[in-house]
Amino acid sequence: MKKQVLTYNIESEKISALRQELKGLGCAVREVSPKEYGVLLGALAGLDGYVYKKNAKPEGNVGSGFAVICGFSGVGIDAVLAAFRRSKLGGEVLKAVLTDTNARWNSVELYNEVKREHEYMTKR
Image 1 (cartoon, rainbow, N blue to C red):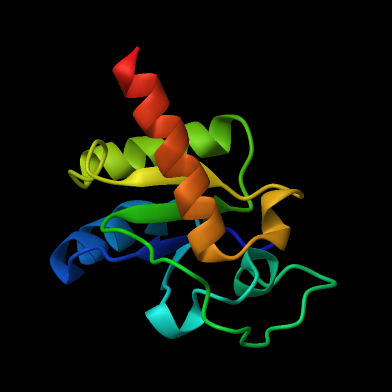
Image 2 (image 1 turned 180 degrees about the horizontal axis):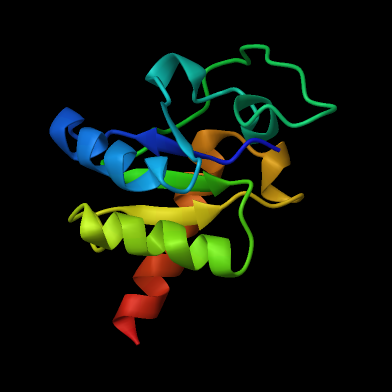
């Protein structure tokens, strides 16, 4: 799987800073458009076995500041998170890691799940 970060609704100047930080990790940044929110994440990430086809528009939307980290594990994920902090996006963006399970979800489904988890964890 290609090392990349799928981004949603992040300001262009912040995306530029993130791109610079991730370049050293051999990681691309792909901005996902609202027209692609119904596409399965596995297809957006270019995983084998997933075909890029636009599905019906999902119910809901992706809120501002969301990212999906693809193709990294362990220490690599830590390096990507450090890049987010250096680019001043650390606490501003909800982040998820692409897994075998959520690769079958669309962007809105994953965003909603991560948002629910974040709200639960911050209320504790």
